[in-house]
Image 1: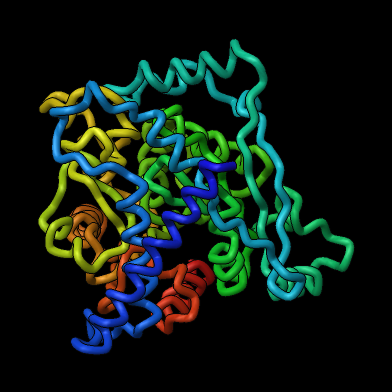
Image 2: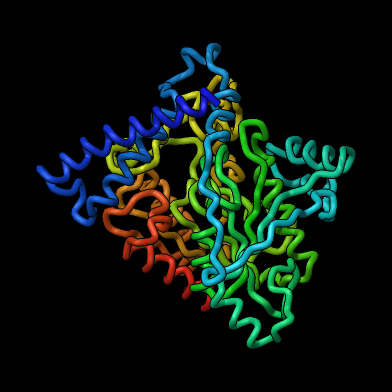
Length: 407
């Protein structure tokens, strides 16, 4: 209890001091970027400062032997994350679990996944030989979408059941972000509900295992199993759209590559919100936009870099590790984009991942022209969609809805 009170007091002190400094800057020098209002600048500065305060900063592995990466990650995971309820006027949701063993996979399924074959096969063996494991999920439906479905199907339809309500139902699978180490299905409930409303579809959110306790490929494996579960329930692959933000965008892209490598049907479309696609390199925008973005991204050489905690927690960095992290299932920008599903990518012009995102768009366009659409929102930051009052967020979410409806 004392520890919690101390953490709350520290966070309150940081928020107060940062608010004073940020407001002073805004009043005397104007907004840091032209489209920022005071609320947006305060939100960015407070959240960025809290993230920095919660995570020690390291440039390299010099002190790696003194760092308990698991304890640091656990302290982040134990911090309260907003899990908003939905009012009846907003929508409804159902929390359930998918049995990991129910998917029709075995070690042979992963015989062609390249350099990480052993890792995937070990996870498969663990599920087949160990105790029953569940993958948490949420089914979310917006109130307006529910009214439309009940008008079409009848009032007694179970809109929160994980099965098709009619033969060609379209469904959205959402993969939350959080740097692979924090976040859950509940944390993105408000955004997902808005996507359900704009797209007119139900949304399945996957609660995949988190790193570093469950490093690569465990999060991707869980997303893959949940996707196969939807196919087993009768959803048509071409009627499934996969979406994800930040690290969830990475997992969404990697899911398509993994489906192709394992001969599973690919989804009908992708929606990527500020996706991380290159885990092995830090492009110039990581430095250029670090004073604007909310994301506090440590360099890949740091033992506390999110991508390191995801791929090889606690291990010293080497060029061999960088080579492994460049694999398409970790850095999906390096994958095969021939015959890739239609893809909508949205990002802010001033986020640290903007160069990564532009590189991804170019890679897809090079192999599948006209497949990917990149929308850059001026002066916006990483996953700006969650700032619901901003016109850019409203416009972006509406655009996602149109994209999904038109597939």
